Image (cartoon, rainbow, N blue to C red):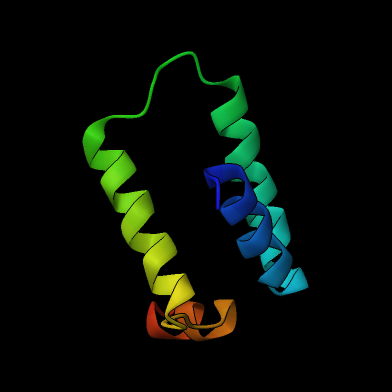
Length: 68
């Protein structure tokens, strides 16, 4: 499976309330002239692996743990 196919698969599996954040992030990437650092690429890969393995929390849960 290509990286593009993996991105589509992951995005298709996200809950609706997460899509606005993903869109913002992708738009930022599209508008960026700078390539991602190796550190950033590794962090993204780690995050995607967490999602694939079901290790996620809801936005409400995130906010609650941060007192937001």
